[in-house]
Length: 376
Image (cartoon, rainbow, N blue to C red; front, top):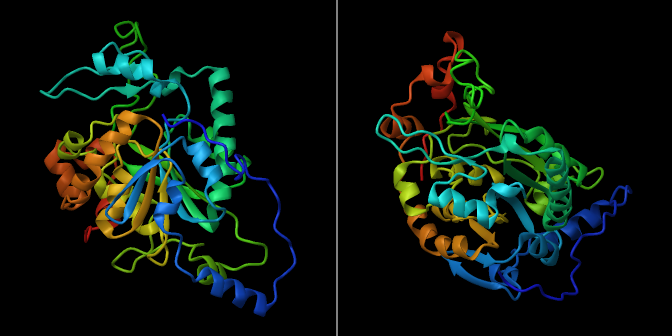
């Protein structure tokens, strides 16, 4: 872990409101001309932390709270991240228990049909105090994200059905604008269990529904008052989402595979997301196809790899040395993967059928309509 530094940059941005005065056309043109200059070189975002370039991207070994508060204001075009929720499932002692099979806060699912299932965190194990801590964590984190993002810059943040309402409301409290949810349709092993230690007594009961989707929050740094999306695009290259390569609008429901075995073999991270999904998010996050994306909870670097695969720039920030070292090796390998369609990958991985998602007859064709045949 990099030692804390003294810096003249604020550790927490001042929550000031932009002026509500409508800017004149000359002011808009002057600001636009200034904003059209190339973004800062990625090396400048390393500050004095340990870092290295990978392709046209960069990874930084730092605590993201300190890093987000120290980089120049309004310097990021988008953030895409899958946070650990600031709670106990990613504490070092819990990771060690997961690694040696003791479980801890991680639920160790059974082995069946010849496959060993990956451990899953017991998000339902949070008590009231931990939920309050979680809220404070994301309120403070959102304030730093507002500092770092350009006006109109989007945040895509992974969550789960049990915690999403708490996480998204905390991000709004911290100053971000809620723009909707992205539903990742994926069959998981979360939920659906019979009551713990009473499975035989209540064989026809499940404590929670079986998870068949993963909610991602879509939030945005507010536009300056009176500014339109088109003006924001001209001035900051942000404000909207990029359409799909076939010209259709980006959809808020995406059929996804579980992370393929070949990707898990490259990066043994407990919450690794598939490249087939992340590359679509990275593509959508830069409406003009240019700018800097950041993943402040980089983990093994899958978001950075997705950016590299489609020719975008990304900065990954990771506080844990083991994951930082893992990302150095994993990012080039994940970025080099050639992907199939989502349906083919899912079928090859686990023989997924429409019935697995309990899709009704009236909507059974939706996944085919939503699927993006990846050009990368």
